[in-house]
Image (cartoon, rainbow, N blue to C red; front, side, top):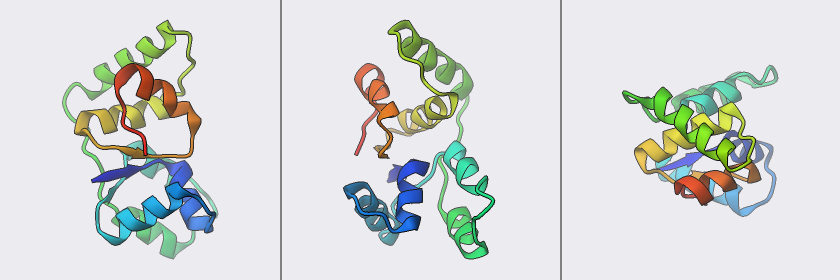
Length: 124
């Protein structure tokens, strides 16, 4: 399994070039792509999302939120803030979903680097 952040999935939808877009395409083609619940929320929040793209997004499996998720996410964000980072709440929730399931994250968003450095998030 491989999780895609909304930044890379949007780039995939737009047909933008990049290694992350290729990884999204490969994971989708091999039925290995998953989304964090927050990424699904972000993607479905686009008012310009076409019905066919909405159907595609909804059809991608999601990572389950497990017991204690919110507590772990809060502690994760506190850890980054302790080290003088300013993590976005959505990024923290996505990172925690990936950490909980030991799933690497495809992203072009550099804001995930501190999660990799301090919490061991695997980035592709």
